[in-house]
Length: 517
Image 1: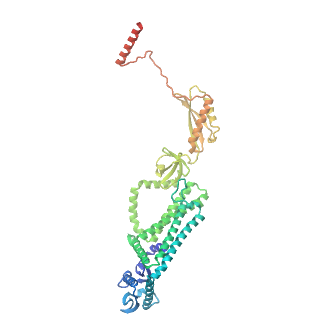
Image 2: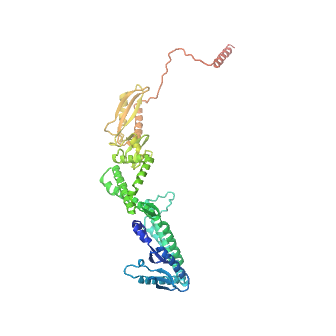
Image 3: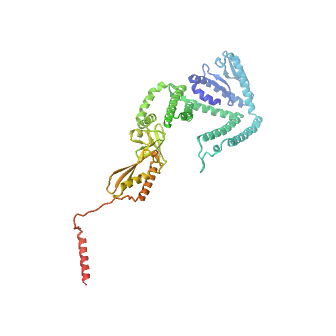
């Protein structure tokens, strides 16, 4: 927890906090931090502790006793190890209310205690005592993580214990299920990591190895490499910035869902308006939150204005189509020529609008296929919105009967076909119009009104079935195309090729000869 707070707070502390951390270094022995050492007049803090750490490590590895003392050199107290100077105590190392001699004595006591502990931890008896304890910690960790898994399965819904890779026929995991699975994995992994760190802290060699690994990792991720806005940022700074931005995105998405469920749905506003309000709120909060986050991070946004303007021009030229769709999406959301649940027709595409996004609109066709349509098509092409204003629409059913049929009987038959269909509105009433005289039929048109445009093909099919059945009951025939051929001359001359003519003449002569015989 302390490490997480340090990671989050350190980048926001500014350059002053980073300079203060760079001005100090810790004296260490076997991976244990003893006390901080400040930068002196001639040497940095890291240069001062580097030689002292080496001398202490050599002394604790040597089994011969070592003596830590304090003496005065150049009017300053120095801490010695077997008469070798380890550290010089300066005023910068001394806190307020304490003299440099008092600070030197405290350092001597810390070093004496650390050396005695280091020699004790290298004794065979100590190692023999710590090995069973380490094995006990490993066993307890194994039992604890198994107990955690059993409690997880017992007190949480069964859906959370499904395998992450779905088996055939199993239900896919929801987002919350994945989140809780991730929490369980992190808890179990955290138990093992904590156990390994505790066991490594029992032994000087492993503790020193862990300490050096952490120092190398800290130096690699904490060294500045990215100059931006008058400052230099490290990999850790960039990682924390990205993590905070992801938290901002998820938080804004949560607020958007909360607004839609708890507030907008209770106001009675149309779904399209609810989506537009939630969209504006989401991206507005995301934009403001990003600006605040960058300012707290220490970025001077004014220094990035020129770069942002040049980048904006380049992006605008390269992404004209996307920009056009984004602007079209804003116009659709505020003007609302189409809304969610509208039945629309764009070119040869017919379907129901299920979602209006910033760049595109999702339309589900009558075949239950989701089509992603760019928003610019709704503004640049002709769109038929069957649900705009009123959902009442008119269907035209062409009907043709043979010449000689009774037109009044046909009219009554068509109106009779519309009477028992609940999908056809009684007001306005169905109408029958005599369109004209066709080549093969008398052409009529039946007009009916419906209030479910997305079911127009189903209603048209039902009506056609009823018209065909009723016309058969009234003996009204539906003609098919016919052509009459009239010849003006009584004689029809047919020309054949010479070979065919000769063959026919020979055949006729032979037939005549056979008849005489």
